Amino acid sequence: MQSRLGAPFDSRSSRRRVTWMLIFAVLILDRVDGQFHGDPDHIVFPGPVGPRSRALVSKPESDSETPISLDLATRLNSIDTLEQFMQLLHGVPVSEKSVAFSNRFGGDERSNAVKPTPAKCMPELQLVPLKLDDDPSTFVFPICTRIKRCGGCCISPLLSCQPTATEMRNFEVVVTSVNDLNYRGRRIVPLEEHTKCKCDCRVKEEDCNDRQHYESHNCACVCNNIDEEEKCRKNDLKIWDSVFCTCTCRAQEPCTTGYYFNPNTCRCGPITLSRPVNRFTTTNYNFTNRRPENRRPVIIPLDPSDPRRKPKEDPEYK
Image (cartoon, rainbow, N blue to C red; front, top):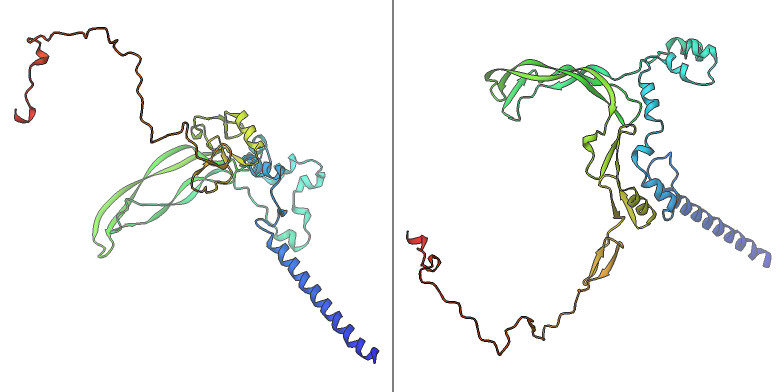
């Protein structure tokens, strides 16, 4: 009798145990999946941001996005072929340097492989609109053309392909109306054509403000108040603004009545007056330069011929 009742009870409890284990596993997987944000190549740890993580977050973009120096980027920008790039590498066999990547593939893969040509910074044909004005009732033909403009890759994200020499070219277009295609004449549209290009800093010296100085070897505007920046980075409640060179609070919380947000402490504090005000007391003007009682008043005689005593005409009745 006991064995008959115990068997279904054990099977029922084991099924419940398995069910609870499955539910617990699903909850754990769902929580772990919900904690992931951003780039899949980065590891995100749950919990508050520690001091080391804050340092990485507040790190300048030029440091986090530039794995190579600008000197090396300048050398790599001057390379024209894959063979020249292989000559710069260390530990490459002589056979690989001579034929580059051609012997890395076999059979059809090697015959179909194409050596890519580096897209260097140089003038190239690009689409440019032939726009006269913002009048929607006019139509210009042609609406665009191809003209040489600077384009290509620069190794460092701090650099961009920029023109060093330009010249103006005039293009003749036909102007008509949009609705009835009524001829309105011919117009000249001047366009700037780039003749020489180079990889140069995106940030220029004129982009710096009064609190910054320009470092050409880093292509960046650097704040002058370094001491203030170091103190700001040590404060967990504040963050350094490298653009305006100021230390600001990480978060500004709303304050209740009678309190204000203090930007120095990054917290709400009570509003206090410099001196208490009692509206039931009268003001006592205790002047120290009063005339003594035993001294006669000074009488100043008036001169009737004084021009300042003459009445002036009312400008309204002139």
